Amino acid sequence: MHAASARSAAPARRTPPAPTAPKPDDMRLSGVITMVGSGLSNQTGAAIGSLAFPVLGPVGVVAVRQYVAAVVLLAVGRPRLRTFTWAQWWPVVLLALVFGTMNLSLYTAIDRIGLGLAVTLEFLGPLSIALAASRRRVDACCAVIAAAGVVTLMRPRASADFLGMGLGLLAAGCWASYILLNRTVGRRIPGAAGSAAAAGLSAVLFLPVGVAVAVRHPPTPTAVGCAVAAGVLSSAVPCLADLFTLRRVPAPAFGLFMSVNPVLAGLVGWIVLSQSLDWTEWTGIGAVVAANVLGILAARS
Image 1 (cartoon, rainbow, N blue to C red):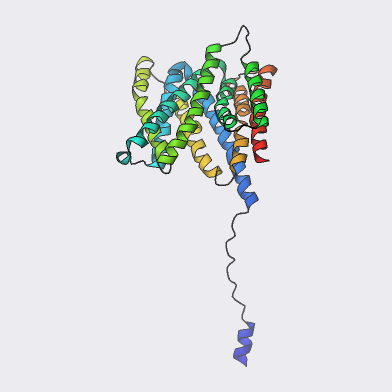
Image 2: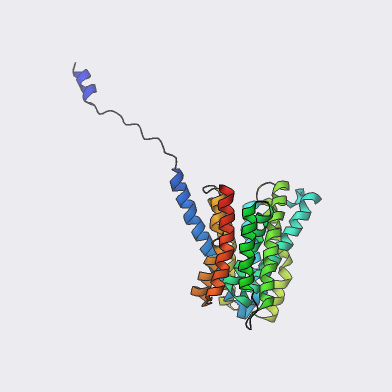
């Protein structure tokens, strides 16, 4: 009886609560926060990199950025280059050339026309890919809105730098090619190995460029630090952030937020570099952003 009463008086053992899976809303919130950080990191990195232009020039900054991107992607992708076939190598080579040309044309455009306008023109690349894949009337409207924004940005005026704008459009064409080539590489080489191999090859191609820049314009520690920061903030952080975000945020929402990058570039250029934009330029940026947002929302409906 005493034993029974003792057993009844003993406290019941509590089983530890089973771990609960994160709620979808929490995952989406963390993904949105990551996207905000990634966008700000990307544009801030470009702004910091431009501070090294007086010493290294856009070419030198891009060379350092390619080196940083190669180190990060090679560590993540770990490609086995000896196993690549010719059918796998040729899109990797093209991707490496496009990757280098895209960054070089973008940073040269930033040097000439400012961060906000350069990034907006470059953003026409993925926008054109999205619009070309559809034949809906709303996409034709988006194309017209985007074209109106570009005309506003590139309108003839005394201070217009058409070479800088042309380089921004070249960056847009390279970004569109980058997207298409990445799809091909992704189908032929599993994981991130193909992109890593392209980044490594691009860095090798920029080695003589970096050496030539260092010989002609001896770098200062501050300039090198700014260039390395650009590589980390504009290559390493966005790459890792995108891997994190795409697991938590639907692809349409991801694309919707990416369309805000021209606005972020304009704000970062204004705050960090004191690059002010007039109302017509903000209108052009808004038109390009609106075209992308409208296209994504229409695709979801």
